[in-house]
Image (tube, rainbow, N blue to C red):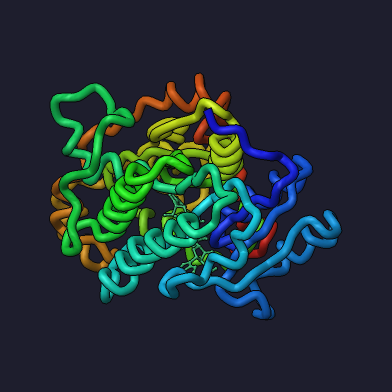
Length: 350
Ligand code: NAP
């Protein structure tokens, strides 16, 4: 049982990110005081939505500079906080030049640094860490012999050379549990979203979400989509799950925060049902050998295609529904709300 003082400030790391921005917004709307860390609080672009939230909720949102790779960087902003929500971590898809430097170091050393600050900050009672379903399952083929993945499962198949982003999330989460279990002053709760979709409060995020949605506008799926199933979840439900995980005294362990599984074709169908025919929405699935041949052009490896395309993927989200009280929006709603936002932001034509 961990009871968080609702008048104490809540620290959100990576506060300008796609997911974190919704966490910050909901915390403010719920009446909390929020400290958001960003890499550069003075930058001209990418923080407009946080400045607007700050103006709407005077005196309750402050921005501090913090960098995952700098030891001690989060300590000052954490002072007096009882709840720390650690979302900051790069989410890069496609070909990553230096996965150790671009993904693993910020995820793993960043988690170490944030938790070292937690260790030095006597007020902190709970840390909510944004992990992912990719720390549970590396490749869809790993589901062989199971009906679905649960919180008991760990990704044991990703590496620096194969699925580096899932690898970065897995090693960072394992390290977080190791550090949490070595002490008993604060507890750790981890949130495991599938691919997060839905309206964005910022157009500046580099999140892999936008790359995936971009494939429904750039014609790369026009000749046929890979038979690739993905966990999907709405950004607003993910934000709510983080807050519920922070303030539910009995919350503990890992929570799969995923609405359902959709294939690329399912996403295309949902988009067509709402926005009508567009040549960039896939109408069919392309044969696996064709996808495999073309994979490198799309920034994917043939091994990724081999181990993921054509295999079903299922997650059991019942802990999150029962213990955190989350009712997940259907994936089709998140997909279409996301696309509508792209139209509203002028990223695609209406
Ligand atoms: P995002 O918009 O790119 O947010 C990532 C945040 O991390 C940004 O605020 C970024 O700061 C910060 N960050 C990256 N490197 C940093 C560094 N070296 N020092 C300090 N801050 C750094 O991506 P997102 O999709 O919201 O992801 C947020 C979290 O959710 C991540 O932990 C991600 O792994 C997890 N997640 C995302 C999804 C998804 O589908 N989007 C699914 C499952 C889990 P800047 O703004 O300064 O770059």
